[in-house]
Image: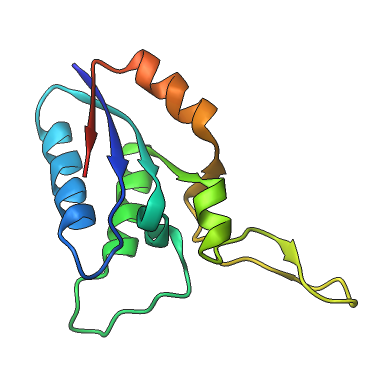
Length: 128
């Protein structure tokens, strides 16, 4: 069975994102596949590299990156929701053409067409 996860909760303040991460790891301990994780609404904050955690806190953003590197899961981020929350990739911001990126590596800005493509391939989509 293949899954796509839709994460709408931020990396702090709610259990949505951490539960999604635990569920994704459980998928890999079984014989199932996780095709993609799509971050939408405040869930796009999981891709913000400017969020910092204290050394004694669970760094959920790094755990998503670990999931990507270990299992090759594609971490898709809704581009519209990301721009509304200040998450950009190589955005030119001044007259000197300096660019800034607040998107954490391993995450990819995409749109709903990408989500639709993964939903079509998946047996189940689960929202957290």
